[in-house]
Image (tube, rainbow, N blue to C red; front, top):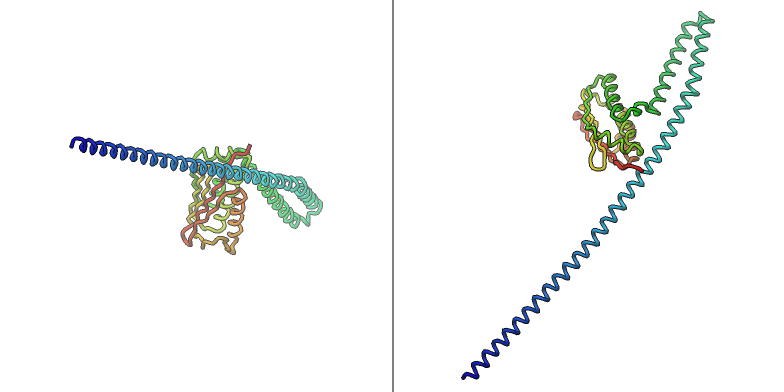
Length: 284
């Protein structure tokens, strides 16, 4: 009896040890499996992170290249504008001045022709003033004092000439952002776009209030020009026979050339909001 009991206890002990060993092996295998799975997951996450970083770097490089290309094209356009401005001022301007002097001399020598000469001279002087306006527009002097002064001056002139009150909402860092990207022509781009937007409002909107907002966001400069005018029927390519389509297309082309985004929000009787987002990438 004692021998049988001892054998039974021994078998139970051996079975318990085997079961414990089996459980230990199972736990080891499970932990090993989990460790390998975690290691594979970490490796995959690392590869995905590296791929994403490479893609982000490639995107940043592409944006810099686009910005460099846009800056180069803008520099060529600016150089051509300066050449045209000089030619108009030095050549056509001189001819118009000479013509005016000769007309005055003719009027002095032929008093009977005085009325006709004065009328022709008036047309010459008007042409000379129009030519000077074209020269100033080709080579804007307003930006010599910075974008902030140019925008404020433009809005003040718009309100004075159109009689439409104009409100500006802009923090100082918005203008600093444009100065940081001066090599890319962002300040000139904003000035020209605002100029064309206000011109469209004066010609077509029949508005009584205009608001302009300039804000700096992450990597971009946002410009919004909004009026409370008659609005228009939205269309990807406006076809307004009054000429508004030409102005909007010109703005859209300028923004696209800078690698930005242009949106129009409008409805008949609800006014129009033009929103432009320009990338801010400093060129070195």
